[in-house]
Amino acid sequence: MTRPEPEIRRATDDDLPEILDVATAALGWNPEDPNEAFFRWKHFDNPHGRSPMWVAGAEGRIRGFRTMLCWTFTGPAGDARAVRAVDTATHPDHHRRGIFRALTMQAVDDLSKDGVDFVFNTPNDKSRAGYLRMGWSDQGRLPTRVALGSPRRAARLLGARTAAEKWSSPCDAGDHVEAVVDDLVHLSDATPWADGLRTARTAEHFSWRYGFEPLRYRVLRTDEGAAIVRVRRRGSATEAVLAELLAPDRRTAQRLVSAARKLPGVDYVLALGRTAHPPARMAPIPGLGPHLTVRDLSRPAPMADRLRFTLGDIELF
Image (cartoon, rainbow, N blue to C red; front, side):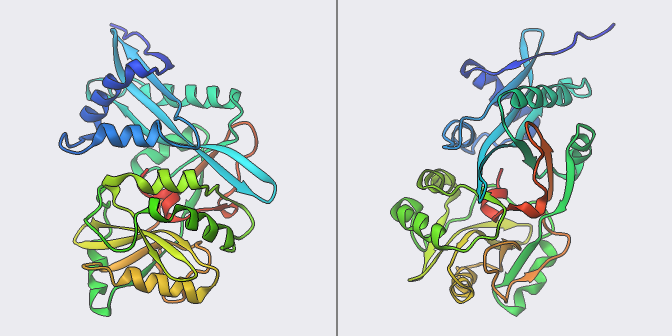
């Protein structure tokens, strides 16, 4: 008997309970975690725009969903509207029916008509091949750097080649982002950035991206700069995520990395290699960074060397 094709449509607010049910069943969410609050923060509160969503229906029920996270890049030639392909899931009882592809291609068609410039994401090894078949291009791994808390903790890196935990460990160092958000905008404006496209770092962006309390981001300060960090477990190691490094020079950057290294229990500090003024003591780690993939929508998508990511742009989503 031939199964009916799933009905693909834009999601509405009324679909949220069923979307969360599908995500819980497909993604293994822990019911004790703040999953709905996290989903709403990510997709409804984003100052770059509310995430467009699509659902696949069958037999009167939602069997899969697809979201695209809005993102704004800025550069010498002006702003670019982008989306990041993030949360998507198909109910376990409806796998192998083409739902993931149907949802994604409908999203591509709709977003192209909406004038979005390009889509990017960092898919895992399992899903990357599917994106490539749908027209995404693999831009290779984003380079990562690491600074050890101390030489004796080098062995902890061997236990860190696994997925990191989503939720942060407690950390009370520094300030909450809301207390210093205006300073962060000023420091971002004063930080030299290479030509290309980088995230538009407004006060609203900083407040949203780093203000969600369960993620426990903290701001470490010097007189000249700031670093936004969070502490999380990765395998047997504890890492400090260097989400943002806002520094006018390498000396200031080094002081901020040193402060992150000294956070209690931290084995190493992790950052993307294209951070402005990468500190000399942060060593590159081949093969550790995520794969970046991009797809053009209404204009040719920029190549990886034109996209200037920090770890805060990439991690978590």
